[in-house]
Image (cartoon, rainbow, N blue to C red; front, side):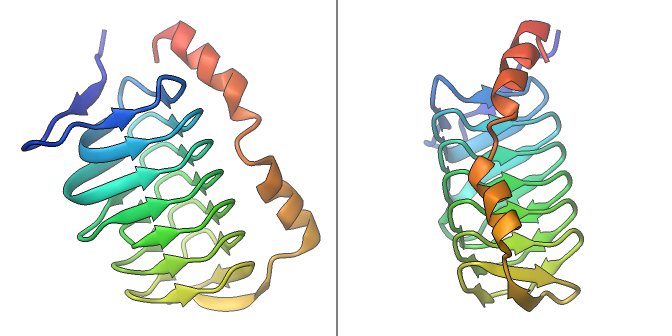
Length: 172
């Protein structure tokens, strides 16, 4: 059986809320804080070796995503970081979707209720206003989040809560 890779680094240990789901194959190192009912899926890596990383309650870091930064990072509540995404920015506001295989580069700031499209690359230092749709390489603001998309962002990870329990029971 694989045990969780939650490791102290230098003098910092991850602080993880008891209700959070952490897959046994996720790697969480150092100065990392994970909020209530958050989820970290198989293969995800969260490295708080250079700076503090805070992941808000109800947020999920999906399979094979990488979260790392050179300066403190705050990922808000109810954020979904999709499969294979790389998050290396400064902040992500609440209720955002960072879609599969997108990349958020150094010191980028994403406002609340944003959608960063699949495969998008947000340039270093870019500041994305709240309610923005961002697509492309390099990422460009393509418009505002539409009402049906806001509804999806409002649902957040509610469908994952039951999955957390199933994965815990299965030892995954």
